[in-house]
Image (cartoon, rainbow, N blue to C red; front, top):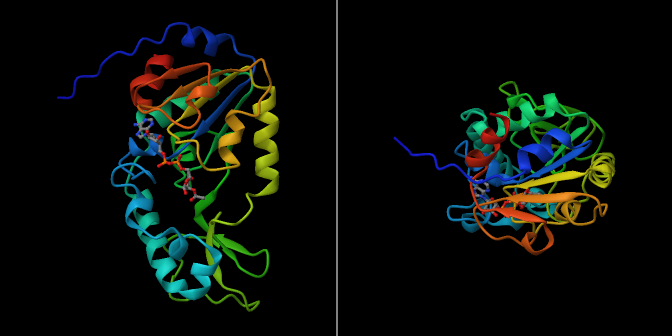
Length: 242
Ligand code: OAD
């Protein structure tokens, strides 16, 4: 049986209780706890797959079937895992908070499945497909046939994911910056902090915010946060709501 080590959390639980506005930024590290790979760590997706082939508009134009095959595998992987104790703890924190926003870079829907409500999906969502030409969207579920991707308007169905070189959905990003700028407590969990503009949410903030990073490793954001807790998300977050 794994022995869970208690992490010294100091006054963080109290800060959570008293915060008037909480902003959380998550990355793939929180879903590593559910068994999904991160992007840049050992076994990370971008270590074994070519970003430009699988996650760019040009790659999709060149070989849409290859791209769909890959995202189909990833979607299956998402459906095959459960939200972790860390995802669940964030949903509990939201229930108790006066003002709570969770911006995630993850496309796996695990925060929503864990019960989080005010979720901003910065990099899109793999549970939907969208048309390359018009505004049409549809669920990317069992009814979706990745071999039949032509849309009636002449466009093609593609995953509703933000690819390299593409802009983030403007309304989502604006809502995230607004939430970050009114927060007095910010949690940055499981992200290397190197992909922009998402990472800047944790740094271009109001001066009041107390920023806590939860990550077993040092990151690009470490020098700019007020406190780094070097632990896994599930070693910290469940303790905070216990
Ligand atoms: P990365 O792979 O860059 O970073 C994952 C981070 O999670 C690392 O800092 C790890 O140390 C940390 N980590 C691993 N296990 C953890 C755990 N149990 N608890 C807490 N932290 C843990 O992934 P992201 O930062 O999510 O974009 O990458 C950002 C974006 O780059 C992704 O959204 C994706 C990718 O290209 C798009 O696809 C648009």
